[in-house]
Amino acid sequence: MILLRILIRNAFRNRLRTGLTILGITIAILAFGLLRTVVSAWYAGVAASSATRLVTRNAVSLIFPLPLAYKDKIRQVDGVSHVSWGNWFGGIYISEKNFFANFCVDPPSYLALYPEYILSERERKAFLSDRKGFIAGRKLADRFGWKPGDTVTLKGVIFPGNWDFVLRGIYRGRDRTIDETQFLFQWEYLNETVRQRYPSRADQVGFYMIGVASPERAVDVAGAIDRLFKNSLAETLTETEKAFQLGFIAMTEAIVMAIQLVSIVIIVIIMAVVANTMAMTTRERIGDYAILKTLGFGGRQIALLIFGEALVITGIGAAIGMALTYPAARAFGSTLSNFFPVFNVARETLWLDLGAALVVAVAAAVIPTQRAIGIRIADGLRRIG
Amino acid sequence: MTTEAPAPIIDVRGVSKSYRRGEVVVPVLHDITFTIAPGEFLSLMGPSGSGKSTLLNLVAGIDQADSGRIVVEGVDITRLTETELARWRANSVGFIFQFYNLIPVLTALENVELPLHLSGLSRRARREHALTALDLVGLSHRLDHFPGQLSGGEQQRVAIARAVVTDPTVLVADEPTGDLDRVSAGEVLDMMARLNRELGKTIVMVTHDPRAAARAHLKRHLDKGVLSADDPAENPD
Ligand SMILES: Nc1ncnc2c1ncn2[C@@H]1O[C@H](COP(=O)(O)OP(=O)(O)O)[C@@H](O)[C@H]1O
Ligand SMILES: [Mg+2]
Image 1 (tube, rainbow over the protein chains, first blue to last red):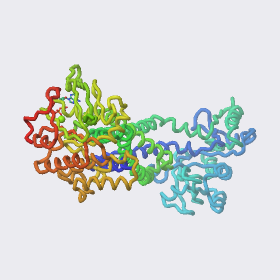
Image 2: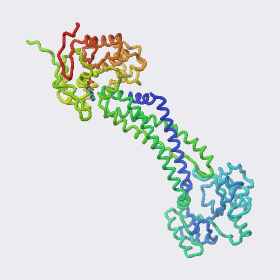
Image 3: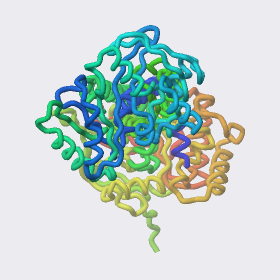
Image 4: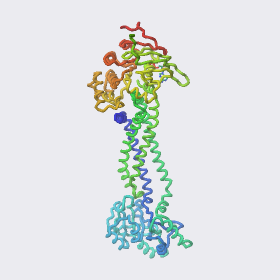
């Protein structure tokens, strides 16, 4: 089709202008993609949460513990399939800048409840049979070069003192959305030590993790658990794992909103840039469009030329930007792995990139097209010479 | 038997046209009436701003008259819708402009083929027609050149090839030599004369170059929106 040939050659007529516009689109799409990835990394914990898991904590605050004795009562609630428990440990490895999540859990029940953490049978046994054993996510072990059998010492903050652990296994996530930066050790080890050092703090857990038989029952079961401990010394608050994770993020919601806003602003700015390019381009070609109309071509064909040119330019910029998003996200993610254990470019982000590019191209072409179609042939021809 | 003049190919009756500049109405053409016989070569002269281009545009169907009737080859083009008019232009008129108005990103051959894309011809037929037309204007050796790589005279010859490639009966030319040196202008005029003589094209040419006007059979003057008859005193032939 001759029009296709014209619009592609038109797009590259002014190389510098087209090149700069493409560069702008590339950077905009790259920035947009990275910001979107930051947002989804922020929600990674929420996205990975299961609809069949509940978290029970002290109703007053997460920093107050619950008695270990609750576990047997919870287990008896109708609809509960698993009960596990743990404590946030908050230990420091060598220095504070090495931050990673570390907590203790009851290994058998925990691993049963979290099948997404994949451990070989041998490693599982080694972990279960070593009181001082711990398992680490693959990324965490890689980060510090830990090998199975290594002893790792954490400095306790909530539970003061130096704590030695032996690496018994390195888990992998079932898929890319699973956090591979966690440090998990035996709740029993913590409890025994605490019993010796601070007897009043023994037999306490930070939170219960509960499996329910089916997602539809989650809300009922949560209510039943909380009713069980109503008016007791430590009242509970039970919510779905998703709600629990969202609770953490709620504090930072303003930041997420700001990032989302910035990502939209970037698209609006690039829209203005491309619109400016298209306005300049079509002004230069008013005579061409007039001659095409003179020869009998219609408004639809003129529109095709202008929209097509806008699409070619934004399409190239967007394609390069999208291709660059992957290496950029990898570099970004490995630098910021402390903050974002999971930092993947979601397929949805690419669809958003494409959508944004399409909106930019169409928005940039609308007004120049109207102008080019609306102008009388005689006036368009008059512009020449 | 009476010998009747052949029916005119172009019949312009009572055509007026004015432009509006904001509040001010600028009258350009005033009650113009004339006819052109088939196979005629007419030159339209007159001072700058007298409305020559405006009149040519009306006859060629790229502008609309305020009043009056324009019949070309039996079709009253003042009554056509915009789409019908576009189709009519594509089939019936060839255009030659002062500044050639080629599409800069298309080669000579592609420029000449351009009007044929609306004709439903096969790719092969389009190419053959375009090659014939370029041969006619003596540019077979410049097929793949872009307009920017051609001289003014060559560009105007490509434009002539584009104007005749659809084989229209009427050619309109607005100052076709206005931007050319004497030699190129002469070549272009020769070519137009040949198209008129050998292919029977009816030509309406706006010019204020007396040398160009001299090549036409008929001359008309347009002054202050009024068309005057042929002025033989100015005709050196
Ligand atoms: N689109 C327009 N708007 C306003 N005035 C116009 C327009 N087109 C032409 N004119 C005016 O109409 C007059 C005739 O123009 P034109 O037909 O181009 O003259 P010519 O070709 O004889 O030099 C001029 O005064 C010109 O300024
Ligand atoms: Mg003029």
